[in-house]
Image (cartoon, rainbow, N blue to C red):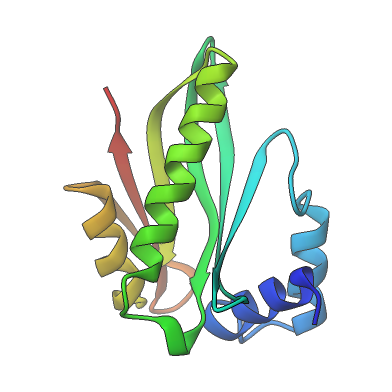
Length: 155
């Protein structure tokens, strides 16, 4: 299984299982996999096997300031709860911040969107964002299927 197939498989199994796998794979490919001017993909490998993925996205720019969005993040089920997600988050964020600093840009805000009923993801992002501002919009995808936006301003 190549890298794109493994990444698509993890995202499909852990986040988008209600969608068609081919659709998820194509979505990733069209996002600029594995790198574009606006998307920064990182994978986490454990014993040579891809165990997780995160994609940071430049949501907006204003002058030298940037709003970063987590477009996708998932850790394969057997690796969850072992600190891999936190490690992937921290390492990849440091890399993106450094890359942008080399371009004389600075991250002003980090934002994440999760499904309202995904308590596991909400808990994870509350932890790594450190007291985020949280906005819940109910019934976005359907009845009882809303979206939670979490924001962390950086100074």
